[in-house]
Length: 112
Length: 112
Image (cartoon, rainbow over all chains, first blue to last red; front, side, top):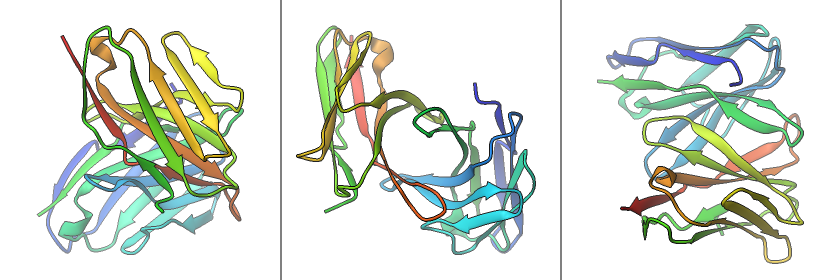
């Protein structure tokens, strides 16, 4: 158990509303990641963080922003949700001798 | 050629049989390799890292062939609980962070 929690676990929202997902870790890991997973696409990186206030874009960052003001929290914001952002969102941290990734339980987001 | 490619399956295999998955990758500079397991509606979980010399963990054996750029996973004496999607993951050195690419996964159904 890598001590990662995500909130909320499920959310239904309407197109055009802002949404913020939270990832929280308890073990002071430097690297944190946000992925989305959709049928037929596998896991795709949205944004990642390599330290407090240090973030960078992944391959599908359009429509998303992130913030990391504390080591333990990595927030993903959809400024104006669209139906194409309906997905399962996973947060991950990096650790281990091989720098493998460990995932949170996921947030299932539905945008109507 | 896709960065990481897997046969999507599904593989329908009787309990007790041996099953093998292959995964090919396109980046010859890839450094680390992993197999993850993902149960339905759950997060991916690390199954094992894959080393050049090959490695074994109980009924699971992973092998890497750098020359041909593929990795494999062998499951012996399959159990009903092995039913899941198996993700091939490849890591290469990036700029600020390593680039981690996930395959889309191979679905395995173990039949009683």
